Image 1 (spheres, rainbow, N blue to C red):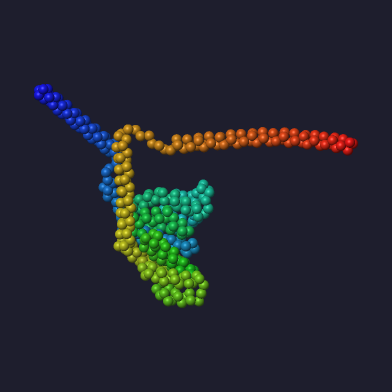
Image 2: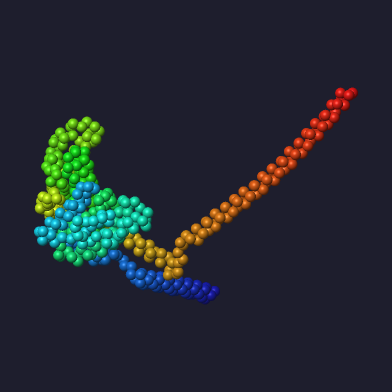
Amino acid sequence: MDIDSGLKILNIKSTEESGHTQMESEESSALKANDKEKEEITESMDKLHIEESSSGLAGSSSINFKRKPVIIIVVGMAGSGKTTFMHRLVCHTQSRNIRGYVMNLDPAVMTLPFAANIDIRDTIRYKEVMKQFNLGPNGGILTSLNLFTTKFDEVISLIERRADHLDYVLVDTPGQIEIFTWSASGAIITEAFASTFPTVVTYVVDTPRSANPMTFMSNMLYACSILYKTRLPLVLAFNKTDVAQHEFALEWMQDFEVFQAAISSDHSYTSTLTNSLSLALDEFYKNLKSVGVSSVSGAGIEAYFTAIEESAQEFMETYKADLDKRRAEKQRLEEERQKENINKLRKDMEKSKGDTVVLNTGLKDREARIRAAMMDEDEVQEEDIDEDDDFERLSEEEDVIDEDEDEVTLHEKDIGGMVQPRETMN
């Protein structure tokens, strides 16, 4: 008995040990299979040229910022003398042997008084855009600018190749100021310039019209909006000083009480609003550079270029740091988005285990929905036809019943007519 029990115990132990060894071999084979799958996934990811992190690429593709040339973007209301002012700047650079580069971004201008190195009209035909897209004048200008912006990286690369031989790049914008300042294409162009070169915005003001305090305040509000929209240094150029001097505008900007005295005679709601806005813009005036120029005589152009140099220095000290901060934040968000997509792709590949996955585009579901809708329409039409047949059948039966009723009533009347005489005869 003891020998038999001992043999049984040995048999049980041997079976348990064999079971354990079998389980261990199965686990090791499963681990090997998982490792093999991971290796295959890594190889497939390498084939797709997807890396673990894109920080190295981002650091290697940093933009080489150049201190020269200075980009001068000229904006202004229609009729403020913006194109004439651009002509004066071009003449000044040529007469002083200043290395300038001229760019025209107005596709609707018929003639330019100056020669442009880069002209949007050489690439985009404004009237063809209006005809092709069935647009009006402003829509045609905006669409032309959008189309030109799609190739603006080539413009930047062209200026970069000539950067060592240039001092200024003069950029003329469309006459409709809102098309450039408040459009996506205008923002893209401005940021493309500012990310590569020192960039300054010049807002041209019509000095004779600004003698009215209400018009002056409207111009100042627009200048303030451009400053905070572009986040670039702004220079106010009071144009047409040969017609009216700009000292009154400088005095209004420096002394609040003088501006209040100018609007004291008007007691309308507009004057009250202007008075309140002048108080809010007092801090805006302190950090604003303003010069008076004459596009006809050339007066004040030297002072204008001095203000441009000061603004370019301010850009390097203040605005560039903010620009780099915004670019770094944008780059960080882009890296996080790429990492999220890579992790999602890796999980999908691990889940599929290298098998072919059929992507659902939704077309089959859409076709099924359309087919079901068509079947429902057919059923509704058949029901309508059946209802129409029932209605016609009922109407025919009602007509037959009406005819029978008419015959019955007539018969009764005849009988009545027959009976009544018999009663009278009796």
